[in-house]
Length: 129
Image (cartoon, rainbow, N blue to C red; front, side, top):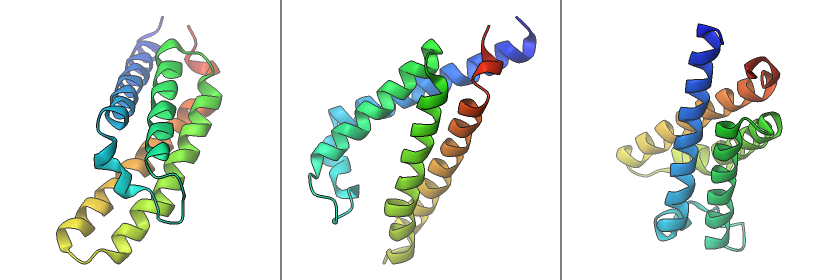
């Protein structure tokens, strides 16, 4: 295993752990997240649980290095949907500077995570041992 490959696997495992933590948070504290579900989407808290499950499954796929390409593409799609339907509207419509800043940071975070997920998906075969 090359040095480059080892570093790449560590980065992917760290992302997987972070995603699992995000997913668990969705299940343990759904009341803190239900307010982020866009009003035009029926189901409220159900979407929090679906998102949590998606994060956990993507994290497991990345850690086990199974179905990384599909997990990466689906995760990127989910995160871009968050950017466009949650973070960008919150940024544009926020009344307070603090909430606008939080929305902007979340927009940047999810955009960066989506880019990393796309990179993983497109290079899944190159990262195999």
